[in-house]
Image (tube, rainbow over all chains, first blue to last red; front, top):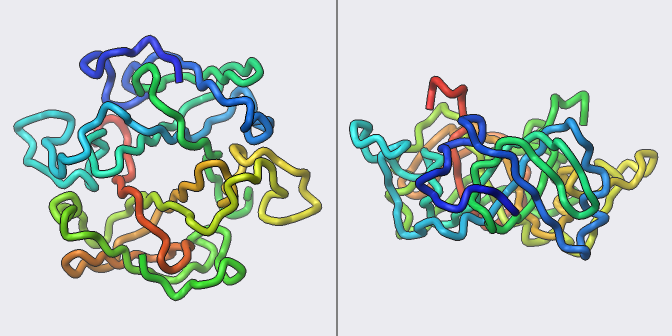
Length: 125
Length: 125
């Protein structure tokens, strides 16, 4: 992905806390996989948080040292054994293999692992 | 993970469509990461769907041939370039490194990639 966020210290904790728009950029080999994405819909983007620590197993949530250290499986910290990021974003534009999304807090150059629709109730599937 | 589901043909499409309870089984090395999981809470479990096809880019949603072929990034099909499964489950028991969860549709032996809390609104973070 391409983003103006280049420094973890600048990044908001979650996309809905002031993250910028970003481009998801796909390889030509997967063009058919993204062919039914639509502007105006929300999707889940899964990323590989390649600058995260993988050997940190407990953190103070949101970096707040007044909160007790908590096992990372109970937090959204990027530090975790397998640093997969999970981001709910709104698609605001599509240009071929490039998909513009609103409010993505991952850093510039973060690899995209997967894109999934948000699931509605059982009747809508 | 350990499950009574051993055959993809038996597995429901989503956990809330009749999937059995299952055990998440963790390595001792990550014990601290799961130390704050709590019975009665919902978590997101990310899995590696190791029996999925990675070269299928479009499918009939839910296997229904009356529905048009759709790019996999717009479906929850396990077939996708990077077959990460995303499952919302309720924790119903914890026994050391083993966590019992309700309604997980992944097959027995599917590797667990990550566990994350469900995010509430901004005020609850």
